[in-house]
Amino acid sequence: MHELNLIYGVDLIGTFVFSVSGWLLASKKKLDFFGASVIAFITAVGGGTLRDLLIGSQPVGWMRDENYLVAILVGIFSGMLFKKVFERLRKTMFLFDSIGIGLFTILGIQKALAFELSPIIALIMGTISAVFGGVLRDTLVNEIPLVFRKEIYATVCLVGGGLYLLLGLTTLSPAFQMIITIVFIIAVRIFVVVKNLSLPSIK
Image (cartoon, rainbow, N blue to C red; front, side, top):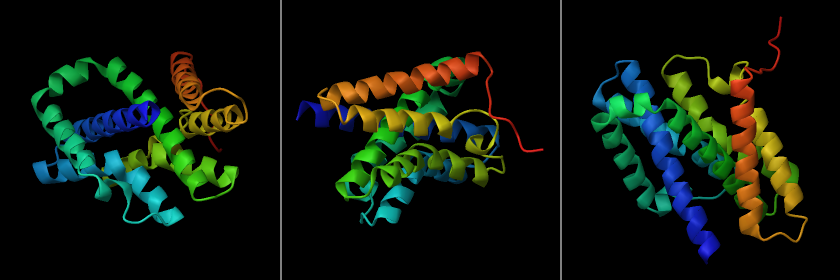
């Protein structure tokens, strides 16, 4: 029960953080309130929605729990009221984003496995959960999505998800498996950004 509460709580926090990031980008693009709210919403739940549709889990997750909508609304109004604070805390937001993609990768894998899909498909679903909200966000504001640029982003989710699946074969508790995976994803994300590492672009 404690583990489920932990996952649920951090999932809501991740939803909040992605909502804020969507709002900030939309604000930077000078969108109106409605447009920015749509971008915040899509950023927060777009990946999970696509995952649920692909695996046939309907209604999709946020439709079953209004707390996700509350988290998005809190993110929107937080972005409005504390825009300058969040912009000064870019490193903090980067950390939360890394936590978010780590958790959403795990949640996506867990949900796909619960639908008795293969580990490979579960890994793909986990990555979709983590990154496709950002893909939709960037596409709608006319930017090349981060995942399609040279920065190592989705690759971190794939490797971290693979680690999580391997840890599932051990005797470690599910909570430790999750913590180790999230720490790994955060550490790798920080390392590749600090070292300015990237995948080679196609010539």
